[in-house]
Image 1 (cartoon, helix red, strand yellow):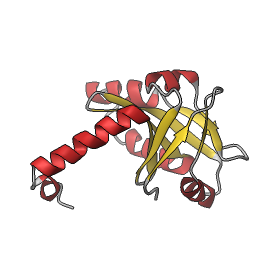
Image 2 (cartoon, rainbow, N blue to C red; image 1 turned 45 degrees about the vertical axis):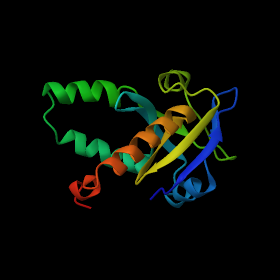
Image 3 (tube, rainbow, N blue to C red; image 1 turned 180 degrees about the horizontal axis):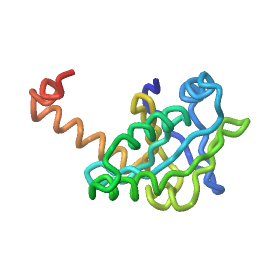
Length: 150
C-alpha cells in the first residue's frame, strides 16, 4: 500500500519523479507500468495513479457492472476514457501526458498523496486547499470519523 504524501516537481518535459517509498511499492509488484487517469473531488481536479495490476483488478470490477446504465456509461467515459498506461523509467520517473497535466493543472509543484492501492497527484495549491477543507470538516464535526465506520 502507498502511505504518506510527498512534494515534488514536474520538469519542463512533464516528467515526475516518484518518491522512493512509492517506487518500492511499484517495484515490489515486478512491473514498471502504471495507469494514470483523471479524478475529481468536490470540484478539485487531480490525477489518480494505479500500479497496472491494481488497475486491471479495478477493470474487472467495472466489467461486472451494468454496461448500459447511464451513470456507468458517464463514469466510463470520464474515468476510463482519460486513462493512459505509462512506464516508470530507470530513474524512477513517469512522463505525465500533456492532456492529463492540463486537466489537473499540474505546472511545477505537485504533491503525491497516498490512497491505499493507488496514489493521487495534486497541484500543490489545490492540495493545500483540499487538505485544509478536510481538516476543517474534521474539526467542525466530531462524528465525522465515526460516521465512516472505520
